[in-house]
Image (tube, rainbow, N blue to C red; front, side, top):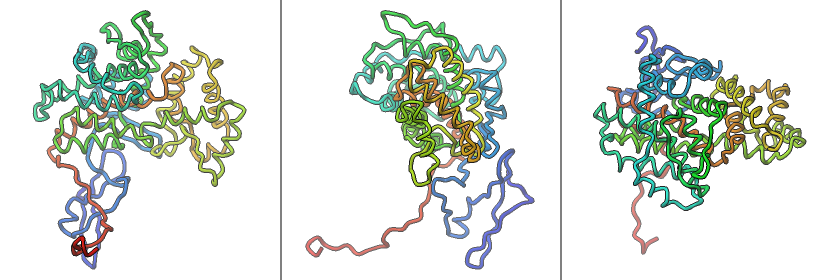
Length: 431
């Protein structure tokens, strides 16, 4: 709602325009410029939309200066340490923590929708054997609209709900099958007697000749990775889902668009880039060399997995993720893995170096999640698909919120045109 006691005055060419100011429940005030073009014939200019609120939302709040991340008002620290992923899914989707009965029903509903339509197996086999798992996920999720016609009508609340459950339930199966396909192993089907994270790990690491018994420490660590990546406000992939949704596209197409955006190395590839950096460092004795390079303003090298674009203090997700990383490394060890040895030593060096503390360059969630996934045995190519799996519920929550918004309009950003003005066409023989 606009604050009736506050407004902003913009003067253009001697003429003033009063712009309403909206006061959020948390965060900075927002100047409403919706009528500015019609009244003053001007656009605002904000590359990257870093100072523009494109929607109102009740799902997630971030205060980057204070290191705060809230889902429906609950801190990510509490959710990650006291809750689990499917409970957080319920919270994001429906706005409140569920009662025991509602949670049981929701978990049962998700568990009983994890199978894929059998004909969709043919899609996987149509990709090259060395296809990136994100390419496979983008294609297969988009193709779901060809198999689940009874959940593509966005005007029907029931169909929206069916699509929601299907996407959350089937995304681990799709991600695991994408992984199995790229390593040439048979697909492993889901089992209804396992929890969400354990089911995913088994589908990734079991083979027909030998089952995979999931260690509860690894299952809990994977569940935390899912929880900590469930939603992150209006980031690039979420904004992509909302923009696609604004056209009336079906939910599977919208989520596929989000996956494609997340694939970008500047967005979802951060934990993969972190592990690749650790491989480049190679051995712990080379860490001082790379720390010196990170401090050198004339060297383009940057320590991946440290600092965050939004969080200027510390990443609130990293504290919980560090606990899981320590538990996983204690279970699996680091002695035979030089990458993990480098990671542990780099963390120690950076946390004790005043340079990094002064610049708020603390290890972030990508640093620790990358370490965990590497220790579990996932290749770096699977890091972003796991991120996409976890973020699906956030995308769907944002999609559902937007669909229900009476102010919904098709997205149409404007531009600052710097090209040629109108020119006369020159016939080809005269050029």
